[in-house]
Length: 106
Ligand SMILES: [Zn+2]
Image 1 (tube, helix red, strand yellow):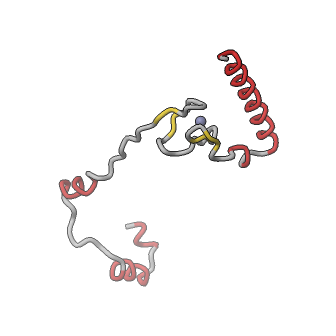
Image 2 (image 1 turned 60 degrees about the vertical axis):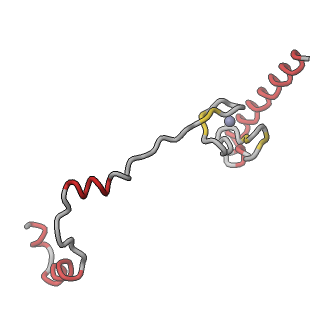
């Protein structure tokens, strides 16, 4: 009632006469039937082959930007200068490690 007092008669009439109002109350069962489709479904995630982070299947990895063994997204583009330098150093280290591994295999 306090809020009604604050409203002028004009705005009160506008709200009660022009705005939509439900004619009848929804039952519990009706409400629950409507909400039966609202639950979230579980997403099946796979691990990235390069960085082992959980990712959606058929989507490029947002951590390393690789898809199917090839670089699909340039992750470094979005980063600031400072962050980019760090990321590039880490990338160089990883590449060196991979090279060593391939040499040892041969
Ligand atoms: Zn990855």
